[in-house]
Image 1 (cartoon, rainbow, N blue to C red):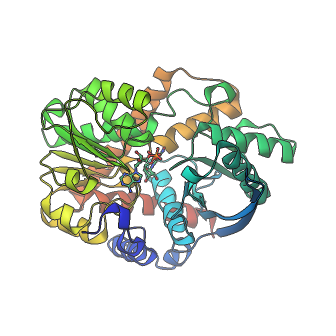
Image 2 (tube, protein in one colour):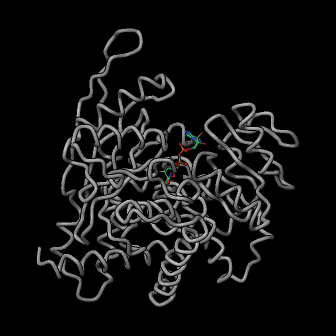
Length: 425
Ligand code: NAD
């Protein structure tokens, strides 16, 4: 079985060829679509590679490769996208993720272009001071390629509010510009937004519960399996459990999964993880591999870790009625085909996981205005934007008799194409 641990990017929906084929397919079905636009949107506006030498704690030197891809900003506003620290980061992956950011921002109608960044490194093998030096050096190497009105990074896999604080500080020093709006996902003490940390997980729950309403299913009666107990997965699990009352029966991280078919106490799992530094050994749960957990009987399956984990085998075996792409590109092309054939509803990533970029947008607006909102205000505004995007996507899928993935891409593509035409590129 090709599990997430052996993921192959060519298999996942992040592959450039797959993404281009899908774009073409969607474009062909839009009456009067101008094919020349495809030439623009299938290329990145800018792709930056930086070689970053840093001094290690043992006195030696190591050189790390960093990336920033700015895909498309036809709709105006700065580029926007997270920064990922992972040993498998490479140009093709960052390019694919930057692409997704363009469509995500267009679908939810926030004024950002799509970008993504990353450093190929294993953060578990680096000390805190080495990660700080690497982050500062990466910021310095990017130079003027980031900025409050040009390109605004944010956290992604293995990066967090502390790392965003270092980026802000390094940029402020090197540019003599203390604008907090240069990066989002910062700590609350230095311009972060209320509700940012939980935003992506909360967005996943908002969109999933909207679909459940349309399918006339009771949210509180659903059995949910979530792969990933990081930023996105943990908040989605907590909100499903504490606010919706759904049964969260399986949760995993890179080590493995905790499972209980009668439901896990997610509030206690948070405390257990904080105390023990692991979810393994959680009382009243069975320990299993990620691969085993993904095919357990459930109603909703939420991959919230890395790309490519929902492959053909999982797609055949899952009993889920709904699969929600909380992670970016967690379903392989083959897996997606099988889920569609089996009539499983797939909420695509560009609709399911923009909660983070939406609240990043709120953070950016608050930083520029120097006026801060309460958590309640942030959540209300987040719900409004996501509910609107969901309703438009669902309506487009009914009208065009297509999947939510195709409907979401259709709406995003129309939005970006209109901007290109209006600007006269
Ligand atoms: P994170 O680093 O906080 O958490 C990742 C989780 O996945 C951890 O629990 C980790 O143990 C687990 N994991 C890592 N490798 C795994 C493996 N091989 N098998 C099983 N589990 C594994 O990351 P995150 O911010 O929660 O992001 C998760 C996904 O969501 C990524 O695809 C990211 O691009 C996407 N995403 C994140 C945000 C955000 O705001 N953080 C927004 C949109 C999309």
